[in-house]
Amino acid sequence: MSELPRRAVHASTSVVPLAWLLGAPWAYIQGFLVLACVVVAAAEALRLAGVIDHWRVFSKLTREYEQENPAGYALGAVAMALVALAFDPFVAVPAMFMLTLGDPVSGILSSGDLGMKQSWVMLATFGFCLAIASLLRVPVPAAVAGAAAAAVADGVKPVVFTYVVDDNFSIPVASASAMWATIHLL
Image 1 (tube, rainbow, N blue to C red):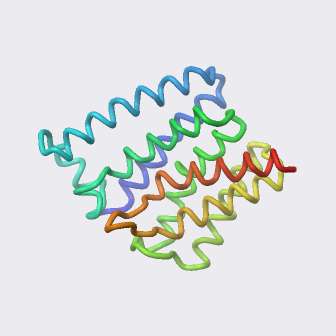
Image 2: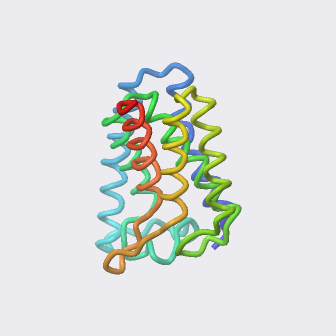
């Protein structure tokens, strides 16, 4: 499986948080993400039940461990919707960009293997995510906390009962939670 097409698809989902930056009402972004979750959940349920096959595209854009479990794209859609519904856009949007841009950058720098990523890759991911949060005017302590959470979520992929905890879910949830907690604790 080639990583470049996967990374390009990943980055293309930046249109969701970008839409808010370009003036789309937050309620529209939330509604779109909820609708996307419904569509993705139905598609994944049908795929996992063996009713449909996502054509040849699915096999080219997913990893081996996703064949029998919910795929990363579905987990990313769910996580982005959760973050959009749970947090204001000033926290949710940077967290979404940490997933849609930070994860592909990290993936290009690393081997793509499961397990813990190399320290320098995690440090680069932290720096990239910190830049995202800083550009979006997240207060520095919260930006640092969010970037650190994203780097750890991206760099460590634990396996729980043979199920890989996918970073497409953990990156936005962990980074948004860390930013929100830091802002509200300071």
